[in-house]
Image (cartoon, rainbow, N blue to C red; front, side, top):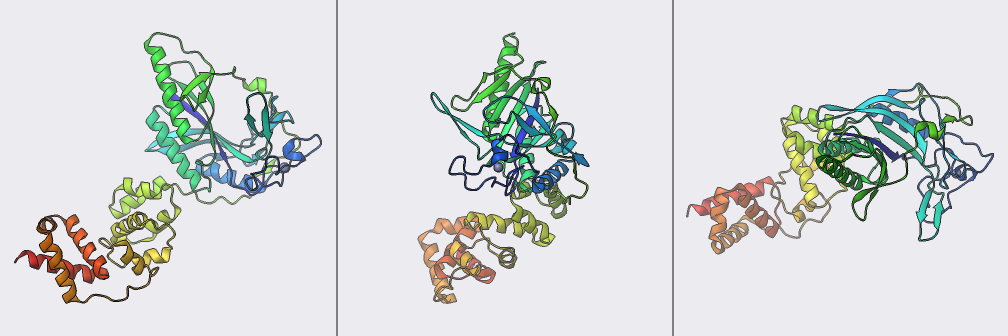
Length: 428
Ligand SMILES: [Zn+2]
């Protein structure tokens, strides 16, 4: 089995690729962010968005591509209402990046090309008419083309996760906008599935197509070389229009644009979260899988875990998980570092918020005799709980947490005191 992808992602620029209309804002009203350039009116001239060029260069670099020192554009000529000027401005030979790869669990999935192109207008099909919205026309995209190096559905999922993470650290959320063309061949014949939107549909389309082709092979039938479309409602792929070849598109040089020098663009060192996870796991003797999950799509977690000392690492991971379990997402690095000084393993949310300084100190704190009496009461009413607590640290933490919450006490000292009292009572 061989799978190759052409992935289209939208670039996080303020304005469109060749004009100064807003790329993503004020989208509610159709055809409001438009001008002669993105409407494709005769005589209008495109001007390249430098920010789009910078972001694309950094993406190509993060995907280990060779960066074209001199990059240029072509017209992909075709007739369709979503592009009234009769061609899409895209790249081919002068593409911003070529010959890269994405490492997925030690295997390199090769990237053939990264190219910059404009998004066409959006067509909405109604029963007996269609609507066109040009707000999307001219939104900057990167098309990322892989070699057919993906050999299973699992690899496809892992590749998409890795790509998604790399792009996340380039400021791109592919959960918001992702359009993919997939080619899948189980035998010699190559089948292409065009215009699959979103990650979930991509995986579902691949799954369906793999099953369909396997079935054909099993029953001795021939697989047709064709283009198919994925139908989300029925979760299947169906045969669609004939495939154009590159010759039929009639690519020509785009004479309204020039050659662009990329050597002056600042290239940031890319963040590859899975590599960082492996390093952190190694450095801190900690499980890679957990770290990977925490940092693959989370810049703050990556920064926090990269900055803490080895002896605090385990507590750091627990603390991140604690914040998450309490649904606190807006904490700062300083708050994290402060909380790292406390033992919060058995702390309840109210105490946690108090320690964090976000909630007022409870009015009165109970004294030791009061706490002792409280523990006695709890244990006498539930003897089984105490027996479990002596054998099992989780049950012990649970009891400590309950008492701390009830008497508004916090910190390691209080926890140690409660533990001591519980143990002493078990001896009676
Ligand atoms: Zn425009």
